[in-house]
Amino acid sequence: MKLSFLINRWILISGLIFLIISVCGCRMESKEEQDFSEDLRNGIVISMGSSKELEPILYDATNVRLFNKDSVTAFYLARDFKPAWTHINFRNSLIDTLKSAHSQGLYFKDYHGEELEKRLLQVANLDEKQLSELDMLLTDAFFKFMDHLYNGKVDPKSLHRIWDVPKKQPDKLKLLEEAVKENNLELALSQLRPVHPVYKGLIAAEKEYRGLKEDAENLKKIKQGAMIKPGKQDQRLQEIQFRLLHLGYLNSLKIGGSLYDTETVDAIKQIQKDNGLLADGIIGNKTIDLLNKGYDDRYDQILVNLERWRWFPRDLGSHYILVNIANFRLQVVREKDTISTHKTIVGRVSRKTPIFSEEIDHLIFNPSWAIPPTIKNVDVIPGIRKNPNYLRNKNIQVYNSRGEKLDPSTIDWTKNEVRSFSYRQPPGSSNPLGRVKIMFPNRYLVYLHDTPSQSIFDQNSRAQSSGCVRVENAIYLSKYLLQDQPNYTSEVIDSIIKRGSIKRIDMKQKVNIHHFYWTAWRETGETIFTDDIYNYDDAILNALRKAS
Image: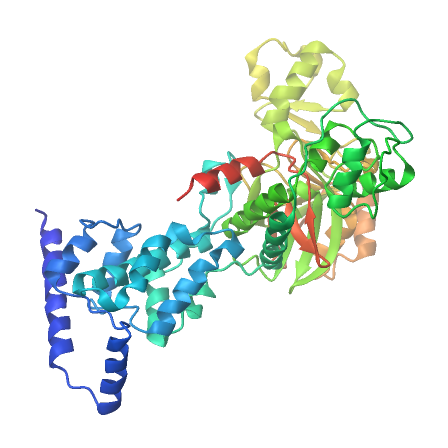
């Protein structure tokens, strides 16, 4: 047997002996005696029992398995084996919190729920060993809930190939000890919950859609089929209109109608727009899938997004850029105020924009485009091999490892050495980066940038890039980021752009950037959903259902 284990057992037994002596030998003042006697009659005070009873619990030789044995053991060792949940209000605050955990997409049953209810109903009749177990079960339940509330039930890295959002770990023992000392569980909970407005809005959405799904009737699924264009007839129109009525997009139902009329077209356009689809009023299979989403599906979508926001950092910074990849939107936030909002173009499904957080480092005006490895190997080199004029048409230059510019006509493009070359597109009207790129260090080689193709921002679905984020009004955004530097006024920046030479400007003010992904939120009192462009939601939902 290891020495450390023997020492821990000795500490354990010594602590219990000290506790028993303290409880039996100390004389209380009269008011404390009165409070203590009242607590005993109500089964409130929990004695930790003897070392013979406590030891098996800590080392898992009990009929109830602890989720956080090491943390529970460390907690009681640190507090000399004093019970933590002796006060009824403190204990009830935990039970009430766990029972209402569904409002955040978490569930009482995951935290010894049934066992705790059973034991608390019999608390007045429990012996010392059972009372000791109860105190530890309450602590264990809180530690597990703390982990779920702070970090989520599911590890995002198990679901996302690209996930790089750092998160600090809370000091579980310290948080609970402070709450016990002050007899106030909220002291700990307030440091664990996500505080971002999106998370708070999703809690309101959960309540709304829990009621809607409980009241809703079972709706028949609409069959997929040929596209339905405005003015055309289709037998599915009656079911489509009923769905639109049910979802609040139509005010009345035309009995027996199979004509795709103007009122229904407007309703379809609105639901398409609200969910990130091209709002053209044409009912294709993607719109049918959208209509088939009932309140159960929407409720699940809210739970998925509550989980996501538990993964994200608690502190986004006082000044930051927040990119919602799924909704093609970028917001600039300073001191909780939204300064500006920009449409974006994000990575297509085959080249997803990664989820991560960083700090903006510098801006480059009139940038050249250093073609990243993926595009070089998947697009450029195969393109050259198929078409000798590919580089000329794209205005791409080739450089060797010494930075020397090469003549493409002298290169044998069948050899593998072409993969070691670097490929660059100089500044100009055809450069896909446009007039500015906004840089932040990351291993994915992605950044924000302008684009010469401004018309793409008029489309509803904008997952079309190779991973970087193209920003509408990128020049306006760049001027905002440099507004703390008097040398770079709006006029100076315009002059730099007009000259066409590459210009790097380092950031002075601290601005974080967060590439996040969420598909449900509250806006002006309404719950909004967007299309799950990368099909992440189902994987998260399945993982949540499997997680204990």
